[in-house]
Length: 430
Ligand SMILES: *[C@@H]1O[C@H](CO)[C@@H](O)[C@H](O)[C@H]1NC(C)=O
Image (cartoon, rainbow, N blue to C red; front, side, top):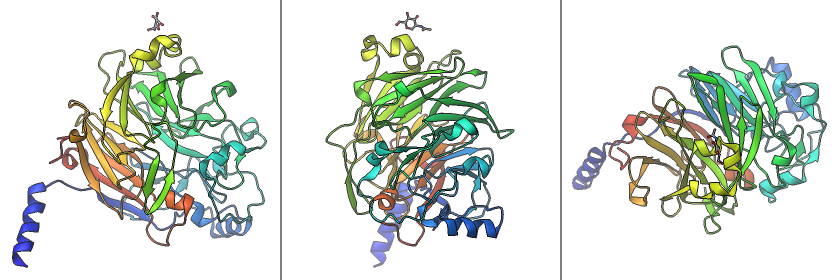
């Protein structure tokens, strides 16, 4: 017994790697309703169904933590939210920028949806609603990922689609909303032109390429995981274009996933994307990317994506590179580059884990580090970001259980955190 204890202790000490710390957790999300009556009214009318509110994306700006709640099902109180970070373990969400912006018109939400076998592809059968943005350009319908840039702006990819798994309704075209985080005012709303949205298009992520020294010059990359392309939005010229490449497709052998005991098959293409450090005053940098149903990583220079003529011509094919393969069961949703450690952190959905890779090393399975893995707290790590102080934040939410079976009444949603310089200790990413 003693010997075993000593052996375990020695193993713990020798690895000395710091794991992620659980900072926030929720059994169900709570919102800051204007009043208790307003909440009860929303429950009664079906506008709020507590268990249908699943957090998905996160972003950190100063002391604010932004949390998105996509409208997968009916009864999402508010899709874009924040809370002020404190020691409160289960903070209440505040709609951003307001309740009004996040409110959908009154509908009959009392239908029960028990089986969601159809999954995300039901989205294409969406009924077209009135375009809410025509009446009120401030509306937020449904958002997955968001990004706060170097210029204190919050970029929101709004799919415009509500009740995705039930009776999907397209309340607005796919669009980008950009807020000034200092004033909480909407700066810009850009609708993705219809001819850049295909039948199976699914825009759930947004990556912003800009520099604090030149904020008017900004590009947003919008991976189309359902139709295998990247829509590039040019902020200065207020236009977008659709970029295609074979590397944006999924790997047919890597779409079989098992999460929390639930087995399912996905065909998601390009999704995770990370921007390297700018290498000159023009902001030239490497764009790393991967498809969700894949274990491979690719890269392309942002000078390619930012040049419409070149990016949309077949000449661009060889400007893209395969970096390598992470190894089996390493499918990933989000990735993020941390310039303090030169490490890209990424989620590993098929392993309940967070992985890392030091960009100075060859992209091989051996050079992939395991920051943390936990079959309880890291079931479906869905999003991750690194803040300006070098803190990694990871949101895990057991989403496949929410979609294909059901969540138990326990802590299902978590945000874990760790100092990037500490969590890479003892891993190949150091
Ligand atoms: C964009 O690419 C084309 C080649 O297709 C090149 O002639 C042009 O100079 C590039 N523009 C910029 C701004 O780099």
